[in-house]
Length: 396
Ligand SMILES: Cc1cc2nc3c(=O)[nH]c(=O)nc-3n(C[C@H](O)[C@H](O)[C@H](O)COP(=O)(O)O)c2cc1C
Image (cartoon, rainbow, N blue to C red; front, top):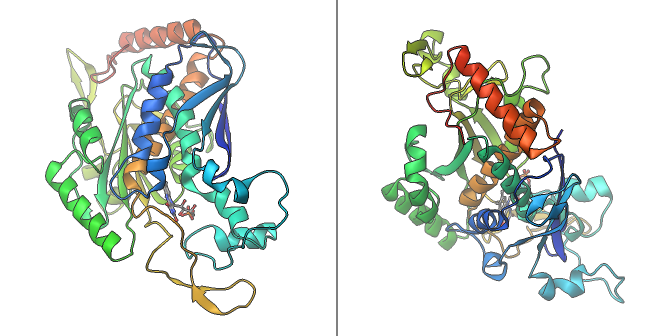
Protein backbone atom coordinates (compact mmCIF):
# COMPACT_ATOMS: atom_id res chain seq x y z
CA UNK A 1 0.00 0.00 0.00
CA UNK A 2 1.34 3.40 -1.03
CA UNK A 3 0.84 6.22 1.46
CA UNK A 4 1.70 9.87 0.95
CA UNK A 5 1.63 12.61 3.52
CA UNK A 6 2.55 16.23 2.86
CA UNK A 7 3.30 19.12 5.19
CA UNK A 8 4.34 22.75 4.97
CA UNK A 9 2.95 26.25 4.71
CA UNK A 10 2.97 28.42 1.61
CA UNK A 11 5.46 30.93 3.07
CA UNK A 12 7.04 28.67 5.70
CA UNK A 13 10.59 27.33 5.51
CA UNK A 14 9.81 24.32 3.29
CA UNK A 15 7.26 21.85 1.96
CA UNK A 16 7.64 18.15 2.58
CA UNK A 17 6.31 14.89 1.15
CA UNK A 18 6.70 11.49 2.80
CA UNK A 19 6.21 8.63 0.34
CA UNK A 20 5.85 5.27 2.04
CA UNK A 21 5.51 1.94 0.24
CA UNK A 22 7.49 2.27 -3.00
CA UNK A 23 9.53 -0.82 -3.93
CA UNK A 24 13.07 -1.00 -2.55
CA UNK A 25 15.85 -0.72 -5.13
CA UNK A 26 13.96 1.58 -7.48
CA UNK A 27 16.19 4.06 -9.36
CA UNK A 28 15.38 7.63 -8.24
CA UNK A 29 15.86 10.26 -10.94
CA UNK A 30 16.08 13.60 -9.14
CA UNK A 31 16.40 15.53 -12.41
CA UNK A 32 13.10 13.99 -13.54
CA UNK A 33 11.40 15.08 -10.29
CA UNK A 34 12.80 18.60 -10.65
CA UNK A 35 11.69 18.79 -14.26
CA UNK A 36 8.08 18.12 -13.22
CA UNK A 37 8.40 20.67 -10.40
CA UNK A 38 9.58 23.23 -12.96
CA UNK A 39 6.62 22.45 -15.24
CA UNK A 40 4.24 23.07 -12.31
CA UNK A 41 5.74 26.53 -11.85
CA UNK A 42 5.21 27.52 -15.49
CA UNK A 43 2.17 28.75 -17.35
CA UNK A 44 0.89 32.10 -18.55
CA UNK A 45 -1.16 33.76 -15.82
CA UNK A 46 0.86 32.69 -12.81
CA UNK A 47 1.81 35.25 -10.16
CA UNK A 48 5.20 36.78 -9.28
CA UNK A 49 5.86 34.04 -6.71
CA UNK A 50 7.02 31.70 -9.47
CA UNK A 51 9.85 34.09 -10.32
CA UNK A 52 11.12 33.82 -6.75
CA UNK A 53 10.93 30.04 -6.37
CA UNK A 54 13.10 27.51 -8.21
CA UNK A 55 11.58 24.35 -6.79
CA UNK A 56 13.93 21.43 -6.30
CA UNK A 57 13.39 18.22 -4.32
CA UNK A 58 15.93 17.28 -1.67
CA UNK A 59 15.69 13.63 -0.54
CA UNK A 60 16.32 13.57 3.21
CA UNK A 61 15.41 9.93 3.80
CA UNK A 62 14.81 6.69 1.94
CA UNK A 63 17.25 7.20 -0.96
CA UNK A 64 20.81 5.90 -1.05
CA UNK A 65 23.21 6.05 -3.99
CA UNK A 66 20.41 6.86 -6.39
CA UNK A 67 18.07 4.06 -5.34
CA UNK A 68 15.13 3.76 -2.96
CA UNK A 69 15.72 2.04 0.38
CA UNK A 70 13.02 -0.07 2.07
CA UNK A 71 11.94 2.86 4.30
CA UNK A 72 9.81 5.89 3.45
CA UNK A 73 11.26 8.50 1.12
CA UNK A 74 11.10 12.09 2.36
CA UNK A 75 11.37 14.89 -0.19
CA UNK A 76 11.89 18.48 0.92
CA UNK A 77 11.09 21.47 -1.30
CA UNK A 78 12.40 24.68 0.22
CA UNK A 79 10.47 27.96 -0.05
CA UNK A 80 12.91 30.66 -1.17
CA UNK A 81 10.26 33.26 -0.34
CA UNK A 82 10.55 32.33 3.36
CA UNK A 83 13.50 34.73 3.56
CA UNK A 84 11.05 37.63 2.96
CA UNK A 85 8.36 36.17 5.23
CA UNK A 86 10.42 35.01 8.19
CA UNK A 87 9.15 37.74 10.52
CA UNK A 88 5.55 36.74 9.77
CA UNK A 89 6.03 32.97 9.51
CA UNK A 90 8.79 32.07 11.97
CA UNK A 91 8.09 29.13 14.29
CA UNK A 92 9.44 31.09 17.28
CA UNK A 93 7.12 33.42 19.23
CA UNK A 94 7.26 37.08 18.11
CA UNK A 95 7.17 40.15 20.35
CA UNK A 96 4.28 41.48 18.30
CA UNK A 97 1.84 39.54 16.09
CA UNK A 98 1.68 40.71 12.45
CA UNK A 99 -1.52 42.53 11.42
CA UNK A 100 -4.17 39.83 11.03
CA UNK A 101 -6.15 39.21 7.82
CA UNK A 102 -9.82 39.60 8.65
CA UNK A 103 -11.79 39.84 5.37
CA UNK A 104 -12.34 36.32 3.97
CA UNK A 105 -12.08 35.75 0.20
CA UNK A 106 -15.19 34.25 -1.39
CA UNK A 107 -14.22 30.88 -2.87
CA UNK A 108 -11.19 30.35 -0.63
CA UNK A 109 -10.75 28.30 2.54
CA UNK A 110 -10.60 31.49 4.67
CA UNK A 111 -14.11 31.65 6.17
CA UNK A 112 -14.73 27.94 6.73
CA UNK A 113 -11.16 27.58 8.05
CA UNK A 114 -11.29 30.32 10.69
CA UNK A 115 -14.64 29.06 11.96
CA UNK A 116 -13.55 25.42 12.02
CA UNK A 117 -10.25 26.05 13.84
CA UNK A 118 -11.43 29.01 15.93
CA UNK A 119 -8.81 31.38 14.47
CA UNK A 120 -8.63 35.16 14.50
CA UNK A 121 -6.11 35.59 11.66
CA UNK A 122 -6.99 34.17 8.22
CA UNK A 123 -3.25 33.74 7.55
CA UNK A 124 -3.32 30.81 10.00
CA UNK A 125 -5.53 28.85 7.59
CA UNK A 126 -4.56 30.23 4.18
CA UNK A 127 -0.94 29.22 4.56
CA UNK A 128 -1.90 25.54 4.55
CA UNK A 129 -4.95 25.68 2.27
CA UNK A 130 -2.80 27.34 -0.40
CA UNK A 131 -2.05 25.34 -3.53
CA UNK A 132 1.66 25.93 -2.93
CA UNK A 133 1.23 22.52 -1.29
CA UNK A 134 0.83 21.00 -4.75
CA UNK A 135 4.63 21.29 -5.14
CA UNK A 136 5.03 18.50 -2.55
CA UNK A 137 2.38 16.40 -4.31
CA UNK A 138 4.14 16.90 -7.64
CA UNK A 139 7.46 15.80 -6.10
CA UNK A 140 5.78 12.64 -4.73
CA UNK A 141 3.86 12.07 -7.96
CA UNK A 142 7.02 12.41 -10.05
CA UNK A 143 8.54 9.46 -8.17
CA UNK A 144 5.36 7.44 -8.76
CA UNK A 145 5.43 8.32 -12.47
CA UNK A 146 9.00 7.00 -12.60
CA UNK A 147 7.88 3.69 -11.09
CA UNK A 148 5.00 3.11 -13.51
CA UNK A 149 7.04 4.26 -16.48
CA UNK A 150 9.33 1.28 -15.81
CA UNK A 151 6.39 -1.03 -16.60
CA UNK A 152 5.42 0.85 -19.74
CA UNK A 153 2.81 3.29 -18.42
CA UNK A 154 3.21 6.86 -19.72
CA UNK A 155 1.10 9.69 -18.32
CA UNK A 156 0.46 12.89 -20.30
CA UNK A 157 -1.54 15.98 -19.48
CA UNK A 158 -2.61 19.10 -21.34
CA UNK A 159 -4.99 22.02 -21.00
CA UNK A 160 -8.26 21.65 -22.91
CA UNK A 161 -9.96 24.93 -21.93
CA UNK A 162 -9.20 28.23 -20.25
CA UNK A 163 -12.21 30.40 -19.49
CA UNK A 164 -14.38 30.44 -22.63
CA UNK A 165 -11.58 29.22 -24.98
CA UNK A 166 -11.74 25.48 -25.65
CA UNK A 167 -9.50 23.28 -27.84
CA UNK A 168 -10.39 19.89 -29.34
CA UNK A 169 -8.69 17.15 -27.33
CA UNK A 170 -6.02 15.30 -29.34
CA UNK A 171 -6.27 11.53 -29.82
CA UNK A 172 -4.37 9.63 -27.13
CA UNK A 173 -2.17 8.04 -29.80
CA UNK A 174 -0.91 11.54 -30.73
CA UNK A 175 0.22 12.52 -27.25
CA UNK A 176 3.78 11.18 -27.37
CA UNK A 177 4.31 13.16 -30.59
CA UNK A 178 2.70 16.28 -29.07
CA UNK A 179 4.62 16.17 -25.77
CA UNK A 180 7.16 18.81 -26.85
CA UNK A 181 4.44 21.13 -28.20
CA UNK A 182 2.55 20.84 -24.90
CA UNK A 183 5.67 21.75 -22.90
CA UNK A 184 6.44 24.67 -25.20
CA UNK A 185 2.91 26.09 -25.15
CA UNK A 186 2.57 28.96 -22.62
CA UNK A 187 -0.67 27.30 -21.44
CA UNK A 188 0.21 23.57 -21.97
CA UNK A 189 -2.29 23.30 -24.84
CA UNK A 190 -1.19 21.30 -27.90
CA UNK A 191 -3.24 23.49 -30.29
CA UNK A 192 -1.06 26.52 -31.17
CA UNK A 193 -3.91 28.71 -32.34
CA UNK A 194 -6.09 27.96 -29.30
CA UNK A 195 -3.02 28.49 -27.05
CA UNK A 196 -2.78 32.04 -28.39
CA UNK A 197 -6.48 32.65 -27.75
CA UNK A 198 -6.07 31.32 -24.20
CA UNK A 199 -3.16 33.71 -23.58
CA UNK A 200 -5.32 36.61 -24.83
CA UNK A 201 -8.16 35.56 -22.49
CA UNK A 202 -5.74 35.45 -19.53
CA UNK A 203 -4.30 38.87 -20.44
CA UNK A 204 -7.79 40.32 -20.58
CA UNK A 205 -8.66 38.86 -17.17
CA UNK A 206 -5.39 40.27 -15.78
CA UNK A 207 -6.19 43.76 -17.09
CA UNK A 208 -9.65 43.56 -15.57
CA UNK A 209 -8.35 42.36 -12.20
CA UNK A 210 -10.25 39.12 -12.72
CA UNK A 211 -9.31 35.41 -12.81
CA UNK A 212 -10.02 32.35 -14.98
CA UNK A 213 -10.49 28.61 -14.54
CA UNK A 214 -10.60 25.87 -17.14
CA UNK A 215 -10.35 22.18 -17.93
CA UNK A 216 -7.32 19.87 -18.08
CA UNK A 217 -7.06 16.30 -19.33
CA UNK A 218 -4.75 13.58 -18.03
CA UNK A 219 -4.17 10.52 -20.21
CA UNK A 220 -2.35 7.35 -19.10
CA UNK A 221 -1.24 5.09 -21.93
CA UNK A 222 0.00 1.53 -21.58
CA UNK A 223 -1.90 0.45 -18.45
CA UNK A 224 -2.38 -3.30 -18.47
CA UNK A 225 -5.95 -4.49 -17.92
CA UNK A 226 -6.85 -5.47 -14.37
CA UNK A 227 -5.56 -2.62 -12.18
CA UNK A 228 -8.16 -1.53 -9.62
CA UNK A 229 -11.13 -3.63 -8.57
CA UNK A 230 -14.91 -3.87 -8.93
CA UNK A 231 -15.40 -5.55 -5.56
CA UNK A 232 -15.50 -2.53 -3.21
CA UNK A 233 -16.41 1.12 -3.81
CA UNK A 234 -13.14 2.40 -2.41
CA UNK A 235 -10.96 -0.01 -4.43
CA UNK A 236 -12.45 1.03 -7.77
CA UNK A 237 -9.81 2.78 -9.85
CA UNK A 238 -12.26 5.42 -11.07
CA UNK A 239 -13.25 6.35 -7.51
CA UNK A 240 -9.57 6.61 -6.54
CA UNK A 241 -8.74 8.75 -9.59
CA UNK A 242 -11.73 11.02 -8.98
CA UNK A 243 -10.72 11.52 -5.34
CA UNK A 244 -7.12 12.26 -6.33
CA UNK A 245 -8.07 14.83 -8.99
CA UNK A 246 -10.71 16.37 -6.70
CA UNK A 247 -7.97 16.57 -4.05
CA UNK A 248 -6.31 19.33 -6.09
CA UNK A 249 -7.31 22.78 -4.84
CA UNK A 250 -10.01 24.48 -6.97
CA UNK A 251 -10.96 21.33 -8.93
CA UNK A 252 -14.75 21.13 -8.82
CA UNK A 253 -15.53 18.48 -11.42
CA UNK A 254 -13.96 15.23 -12.62
CA UNK A 255 -14.85 13.17 -15.66
CA UNK A 256 -13.66 9.71 -16.63
CA UNK A 257 -13.87 9.20 -20.40
CA UNK A 258 -17.06 10.64 -21.86
CA UNK A 259 -18.27 11.35 -18.31
CA UNK A 260 -21.21 13.79 -18.23
CA UNK A 261 -21.28 13.85 -22.04
CA UNK A 262 -22.21 10.15 -22.09
CA UNK A 263 -25.17 10.57 -19.76
CA UNK A 264 -27.49 12.09 -22.36
CA UNK A 265 -26.75 9.63 -25.17
CA UNK A 266 -28.14 6.11 -25.79
CA UNK A 267 -26.03 3.12 -24.80
CA UNK A 268 -25.57 2.13 -28.43
CA UNK A 269 -23.64 5.38 -28.99
CA UNK A 270 -21.65 5.30 -25.79
CA UNK A 271 -20.29 1.80 -25.14
CA UNK A 272 -17.07 0.83 -26.86
CA UNK A 273 -17.68 -2.32 -28.91
CA UNK A 274 -15.20 -5.19 -29.17
CA UNK A 275 -13.18 -6.18 -32.20
CA UNK A 276 -10.54 -8.84 -32.68
CA UNK A 277 -7.43 -8.50 -34.85
CA UNK A 278 -4.70 -11.00 -35.71
CA UNK A 279 -2.00 -8.54 -34.70
CA UNK A 280 -3.45 -7.07 -31.50
CA UNK A 281 -6.04 -9.59 -30.30
CA UNK A 282 -8.88 -7.87 -28.43
CA UNK A 283 -9.54 -4.26 -29.47
CA UNK A 284 -12.22 -1.64 -28.82
CA UNK A 285 -13.95 0.58 -31.36
CA UNK A 286 -13.70 3.68 -29.15
CA UNK A 287 -12.77 4.79 -25.64
CA UNK A 288 -15.78 6.54 -24.14
CA UNK A 289 -15.16 4.43 -21.02
CA UNK A 290 -11.86 6.28 -20.54
CA UNK A 291 -9.94 3.03 -20.08
CA UNK A 292 -11.91 1.88 -17.04
CA UNK A 293 -14.81 -0.58 -16.84
CA UNK A 294 -16.11 -1.91 -13.54
CA UNK A 295 -13.52 0.10 -11.62
CA UNK A 296 -10.69 -1.76 -13.42
CA UNK A 297 -8.36 -0.78 -16.25
CA UNK A 298 -9.46 -2.38 -19.53
CA UNK A 299 -6.20 -1.78 -21.41
CA UNK A 300 -7.31 1.33 -23.29
CA UNK A 301 -5.80 4.75 -22.40
CA UNK A 302 -7.13 6.14 -19.13
CA UNK A 303 -8.80 9.52 -19.73
CA UNK A 304 -9.42 11.74 -16.70
CA UNK A 305 -10.47 15.39 -16.90
CA UNK A 306 -10.55 18.01 -14.15
CA UNK A 307 -12.62 21.22 -14.17
CA UNK A 308 -10.91 24.01 -12.25
CA UNK A 309 -12.88 26.97 -10.97
CA UNK A 310 -11.43 30.49 -11.37
CA UNK A 311 -8.80 31.54 -8.79
CA UNK A 312 -10.59 33.05 -5.74
CA UNK A 313 -8.10 35.88 -5.01
CA UNK A 314 -9.14 38.77 -7.26
CA UNK A 315 -7.56 42.21 -7.72
CA UNK A 316 -11.12 43.32 -8.59
CA UNK A 317 -12.00 42.62 -5.00
CA UNK A 318 -15.25 40.84 -4.24
CA UNK A 319 -17.48 41.76 -1.33
CA UNK A 320 -16.57 40.35 2.05
CA UNK A 321 -17.53 41.00 5.67
CA UNK A 322 -14.95 41.81 8.33
CA UNK A 323 -14.86 38.89 10.77
CA UNK A 324 -14.89 41.17 13.82
CA UNK A 325 -16.44 44.56 12.94
CA UNK A 326 -19.01 42.84 10.63
CA UNK A 327 -18.72 45.73 8.18
CA UNK A 328 -19.01 44.98 4.48
CA UNK A 329 -15.46 45.37 3.13
CA UNK A 330 -13.47 44.31 0.04
CA UNK A 331 -12.10 40.76 0.29
CA UNK A 332 -8.44 40.30 1.19
CA UNK A 333 -6.03 40.52 -1.75
CA UNK A 334 -2.43 39.41 -1.88
CA UNK A 335 -0.09 38.42 -4.72
CA UNK A 336 -1.86 35.72 -6.65
CA UNK A 337 -2.21 33.76 -9.88
CA UNK A 338 -4.72 34.95 -12.47
CA UNK A 339 -4.98 31.49 -14.01
CA UNK A 340 -3.33 28.26 -12.85
CA UNK A 341 -4.96 25.66 -15.13
CA UNK A 342 -1.60 24.81 -16.82
CA UNK A 343 -0.07 24.20 -13.38
CA UNK A 344 -3.11 22.17 -12.29
CA UNK A 345 -2.67 19.97 -15.35
CA UNK A 346 0.84 19.09 -14.14
CA UNK A 347 -0.50 18.40 -10.66
CA UNK A 348 -3.19 16.23 -12.28
CA UNK A 349 -0.51 14.19 -14.01
CA UNK A 350 1.26 13.69 -10.65
CA UNK A 351 -1.99 12.68 -8.92
CA UNK A 352 -2.80 10.12 -11.62
CA UNK A 353 0.78 8.84 -11.21
CA UNK A 354 0.19 8.36 -7.48
CA UNK A 355 -3.06 6.43 -8.00
CA UNK A 356 -1.64 4.22 -10.75
CA UNK A 357 1.54 3.49 -8.79
CA UNK A 358 -0.63 2.47 -5.83
CA UNK A 359 -2.74 0.20 -8.06
CA UNK A 360 0.36 -1.28 -9.71
CA UNK A 361 1.98 -1.97 -6.32
CA UNK A 362 -1.25 -3.63 -5.18
CA UNK A 363 -1.03 -5.94 -8.19
CA UNK A 364 2.75 -6.45 -8.57
CA UNK A 365 4.07 -6.04 -5.01
CA UNK A 366 6.45 -3.55 -3.42
CA UNK A 367 9.08 -5.54 -1.54
CA UNK A 368 11.63 -5.09 -4.28
CA UNK A 369 11.86 -3.27 -7.59
CA UNK A 370 13.12 -6.42 -9.34
CA UNK A 371 10.16 -8.48 -8.12
CA UNK A 372 7.79 -5.65 -9.15
CA UNK A 373 9.18 -5.65 -12.71
CA UNK A 374 9.15 -9.46 -12.96
CA UNK A 375 5.57 -9.65 -11.75
CA UNK A 376 4.43 -6.99 -14.25
CA UNK A 377 6.20 -8.84 -17.09
CA UNK A 378 4.59 -12.15 -16.05
CA UNK A 379 1.16 -10.49 -16.05
CA UNK A 380 1.77 -9.20 -19.55
CA UNK A 381 2.61 -12.71 -20.72
CA UNK A 382 -0.50 -14.12 -19.08
CA UNK A 383 -2.61 -11.47 -20.82
CA UNK A 384 -1.07 -12.30 -24.21
CA UNK A 385 -1.96 -15.97 -23.68
CA UNK A 386 -5.60 -14.91 -23.22
CA UNK A 387 -5.56 -12.95 -26.49
CA UNK A 388 -4.89 -9.47 -25.10
CA UNK A 389 -1.64 -8.25 -26.60
CA UNK A 390 -2.45 -4.60 -25.91
CA UNK A 391 -2.38 -2.42 -29.00
CA UNK A 392 -1.19 0.43 -26.81
CA UNK A 393 0.37 -1.57 -23.98
CA UNK A 394 4.01 -0.92 -24.71
CA UNK A 395 6.31 -2.84 -22.39
CA UNK A 396 9.33 -1.00 -21.01
C1 LIG B 1 -1.77 25.15 -9.10
C2 LIG B 1 -2.77 25.99 -8.35
C3 LIG B 1 -2.47 27.31 -8.08
C4 LIG B 1 -3.37 28.11 -7.41
N1 LIG B 1 -3.05 29.43 -7.16
C5 LIG B 1 -3.91 30.19 -6.46
C6 LIG B 1 -3.59 31.57 -6.19
O1 LIG B 1 -2.53 32.08 -6.58
N2 LIG B 1 -4.48 32.28 -5.49
C7 LIG B 1 -5.67 31.76 -5.05
O2 LIG B 1 -6.45 32.44 -4.42
N3 LIG B 1 -5.99 30.47 -5.30
C8 LIG B 1 -5.14 29.67 -5.99
N4 LIG B 1 -5.49 28.38 -6.24
C9 LIG B 1 -6.78 27.87 -5.80
C10 LIG B 1 -6.92 27.80 -4.29
O3 LIG B 1 -5.82 27.12 -3.72
C11 LIG B 1 -8.25 27.13 -3.88
O4 LIG B 1 -9.32 27.71 -4.58
C12 LIG B 1 -8.48 27.27 -2.41
O5 LIG B 1 -7.51 26.51 -1.70
C13 LIG B 1 -9.86 26.81 -1.93
O6 LIG B 1 -10.08 25.48 -2.22
P1 LIG B 1 -11.27 25.03 -3.18
O7 LIG B 1 -11.24 25.93 -4.37
O8 LIG B 1 -10.95 23.61 -3.54
O9 LIG B 1 -12.56 25.18 -2.43
C14 LIG B 1 -4.61 27.56 -6.96
C15 LIG B 1 -4.90 26.22 -7.24
C16 LIG B 1 -3.99 25.44 -7.94
C17 LIG B 1 -4.32 24.01 -8.23
